[in-house]
Amino acid sequence: MSLLFAGFSSFPSAPRNPTEDLARALQCERGRSDGLHAEILPVEWEGSWSRLKAAIEAVRPTTVVLFGLHQRAERLRIELVARNRRELGHADAVGGFPSGPAVLDGPQSLPANLPWNDVAAALRSAGASFEWSTNAGGYLCNDTFYRLAHHAASLGVMHYGFIHVPLSDEAVADTVASETMPDVFCSVPAATIERAARALAATLHAGADANQEALL
Image (cartoon, rainbow, N blue to C red; front, side):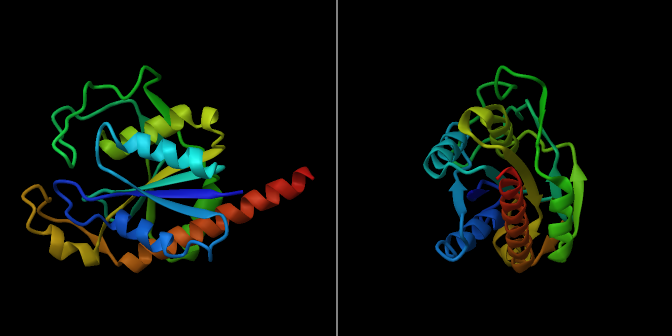
């Protein structure tokens, strides 16, 4: 059983993305964390999903969790629903724009399907404050989340979800000059984000192993 966690690279209003830092930290543990893989996705309307799809096809994970930056978040936000919508006029990291208001020809929303009790317990054990959300926005992270939910079954992915994180303390200095930043925003230590991700990975891995043993 394997897990794939993915973060996103920088984009116009976030010259340093804490979810890229998270993915790099997890990549450094490759070989020490059995079954855990990490990928950094480009913030590109036409490139993010293709990179994630290629990673899924290479790793063949049973569980995929996306992490994205939400600059107005006060704590981790567990996104329960992927929305079939795009914010028109919102440029990506290379100046590209969405081709239309919908992600795909599909339903208006698709639910994530992680084991929520286990997710909550893992984050609490890591000391990470979080909240539940049904609005993942209309930018690239939601776009990729919706595509993941739409294609998960055909790619052999049994469980998938998306977590928004606030700006990290370490990224504030790099980001504060951005003209698009909100007047007031929160930040958390990068170590808290990493600790939460590792606790979540351990919990999801243990749950999958338990389910596999039950089937034997």
